Image 1 (cartoon, one colour):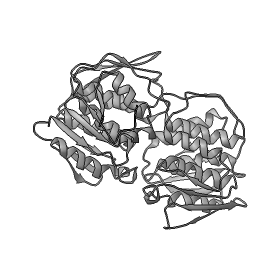
Image 2: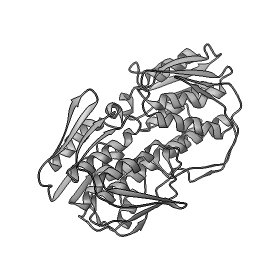
Image 3: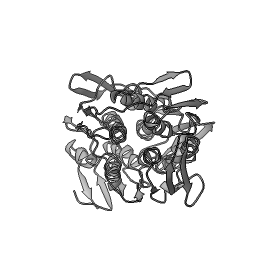
Length: 410
């Protein structure tokens, strides 16, 4: 497919019965790549993510340049900060202008406490940063807020076994995105690492990281957009191979959420079958453990005229864009309001008749493009900067075309 400025998705209410091969999980893939690098050996990775973020991480891990540009990959920035610091590498880590606005202070404070030498090159608390070394371990205990970013915690978990004295990580306050922390712990255990998690403290002794062959599950975040297509289309049956009922990924909760919004999920040994069922007229959803699903759910509720209360979405302010502001802007184009109604609580109120066509901005955010794409089942949708999907799901537009939607480059 060419790289258009915009792409038009023609209104298609009847989708073809389709088998959609969602790419491998970006979250699992990036963790496996870091652990493989820490083990010092190569392993066989089946179904590694094709996402640009994963390709960037893999490239930088094999790049000896002092200056490393992560572009817009937040996970890559945080994971590499910990990895380079603990492995005593001299590196400068930088990224896009938006990346330089995304905080990293909490992780760096923890790494400095352990004994790493890291300095800010521009603004305190934000990239770019210079990693200068790690002479000896000063502390085997750090305390870190549990409600800011699970990526900080996951970064520390993965490097902990490579520390001479291991590491105990105390999570203070409420822990957000807990499934991502559990995913990291599960994956390190697949590499032979033992750990203990009691109350709010994760303890990981210093120990070898074994090299294991790994198979990556398809990405549940990527799968969520197909739930949205089924929810909004008049007729749709979609099969997603490879997704498992016993998954490491917290975004599997999309099955339970979408059961309220009109999608039935049936598991078998080969994957999941999605089909339409009756939706509720009003829902209340806590996204504390699954913030990446919020945009998708917002669009479905708006288009299906379902009143909704969203909580646990504070972290959306510091993602690829301010996703709360972006949702407010774009939902207004389809006569829907999304307003704050309390501390970390928002109400989504659908409006009148949906327009026949809308032009949607993506804010350089892959999830904005993919979350709003299913609106093509009820109207013509023009998406700006459609290539942003390459960050996590490069084959997305091809898969949309294969489901029966007409796409026009404009």
